[in-house]
Image (cartoon, rainbow, N blue to C red; front, side, top):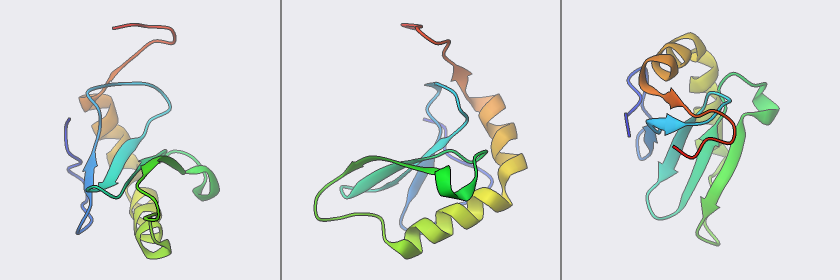
Length: 95
């Protein structure tokens, strides 16, 4: 799991999966509480996808705001990292 190099957020783990699928995205996790997928090339309203949450814990509006802001600010660098660090799986691939 390669970590993001272009930015960090205090209290969150940010990474790419080495073998992952399109569209380009990274994962953000608050340990033991929640994980989201951040589709950084999409519009702000479509950028966040919840992977899991340990009820009643959810990402706060503040945490999401920081993730969205940094993803938008760093789109070019994120895409370069994605292309360098992620082996994109083909649709239907089992590898």
